[in-house]
Amino acid sequence: MKIRSAEFIKSAVEPKQYPAGRFPEIAFLGRSNAGKSSLINTLVNRKRLVKTSNTPGKTRHLNFFLINEKWMFVDLPGYGYAKVPITLRKNWKQWIETYLQERESLKGVVLVMDIRRTPRQEELGLVEWLTDRKRRCILVMTKADKLSKARQLRQGAAALEAFSKGPDALILFSAKTGQGKDSLWEAIEACL
Ligand SMILES: Nc1nc2c(ncn2[C@@H]2O[C@H](COP(=O)(O)OP(=O)(O)OP(=O)(O)O)[C@@H](O)[C@H]2O)c(=O)[nH]1
Ligand SMILES: [Mg+2]
Image 1: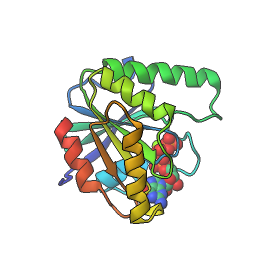
Image 2: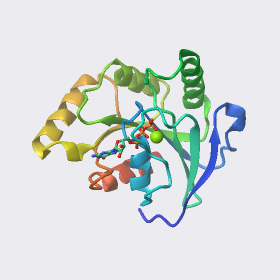
Image 3: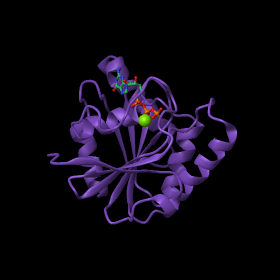
């Protein structure tokens, strides 16, 4: 994919703050520290369009980015981070669920997970929940550079086996080496 422009539009929490849904949207979702922000930067060939961090739970808003003046990418706050106050977590859950369920311009969800984990209830439940709501879902196993090729394939196969419903695609990815970038763009374009 040729990226001509990638710009930060807005940081928002509640639905009334979201930009108008004028562009088809792809949302990036996953645990804190999974590598969502790094993945977006890699996809759009930017080093620091999206802030990344070693401190989990850094992304606390929905961040909207306009790509090629055609599509919106939305970096969602990571779920499952214990140090966030429970009240905040509850609000996030509600906002994220509302967003995922009701946002009309949303065309696909990229669920990002660390390749060294195997999908657990969080991921399984989420993919099923999305599939039930007719949302297209791409599972990305990132940080592939941390494993040998053979182990990457094993983790991928184990992940696929764990799901009874969906995802629509599974991609082994690395923000460090760029592995899987073209495949992920293809999967995203299929949603758009
Ligand atoms: N080796 C390796 N490290 C990665 C990769 N992707 C992300 N990281 C590292 O993992 C850490 C978390 O990355 P982020 O992209 O900030 O993760 P995030 O999911 O956006 O995290 P939150 O915003 O806190 O939810 C950072 O230290 C990154 O440098 C990858 O593909 N390979
Ligand atoms: Mg982030």
